[in-house]
Image (spheres, rainbow, N blue to C red):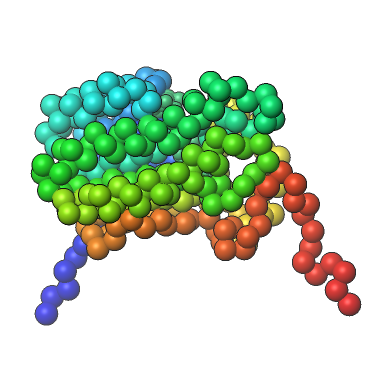
Length: 279
Ligand SMILES: NC(=O)c1ccc[n+]([C@@H]2O[C@H](COP(=O)([O-])OP(=O)(O)OC[C@H]3O[C@@H](n4cnc5c(N)ncnc54)[C@H](OP(=O)(O)O)[C@@H]3O)[C@@H](O)[C@H]2O)c1
């Protein structure tokens, strides 16, 4: 009996929020390589145009829709514009987030507005987008929604209130969405990246700032190095494709063993050798 071949994205239309930079652009390029047409959505036009150019260079169609995911009007327009110009949507990837947002402030300096923005972008945006696209998916009786959480959603970290709290919410949002939408043949899954080295993809100032962080974070990772954007992009490829059709409500950790090991940058932990002090 011939073995059925799965895993192709040929002809799929995939929306990626936060698609202009970092993991979003890496996913856009990988998924385009595998045959998907890509729609990128975020606030700044220039990075989105850059990703779109990279997608077109790979021979696929690209659409840029400037979108703030915290604004449901703009989110609805993203869906409408994509359907108008690309004709359909197969997968929606909720990747937008504020990665380096809240850490510099201590608890008593965090304003109500800081809290709202952190929760809005990292959690509510994923809800608004998933709610909007799932209506179309439910009518069509198929579709995939992918959310992007973080290892920080599974642990605490000193002063990182909005990010860690929102990312924990994203993991459970995945579960609730998955159970709500299963009857419509919609799959909902969550990617949990660990420390992924996107700094080469960041502006020069950020790169300089993060050079020492790179060296420190490596020490927390059992495999001995940070992840690469393509590690996450390949996981996205699996979750976008029909190879993952039987999976819903799951979270998939790609973090070099970081969570398994239980070590993390908590804001306190000293780096000590496990062998130290042994007789
Ligand atoms: N890199 C890592 O190590 C790592 C680890 C764990 C989880 N993650 C998660 O992976 C995702 C991508 O992170 P990254 O490392 O690639 O960081 P990044 O380069 O800063 O990407 C974040 C993207 O989100 C977009 N964005 C921010 N606010 C938005 C809003 N209100 N509406 C629409 N788009 C918005 C940004 O574009 P605009 O500013 O133009 O809107 C940007 O393109 C995030 O959800 C992050 O939490 C990353």
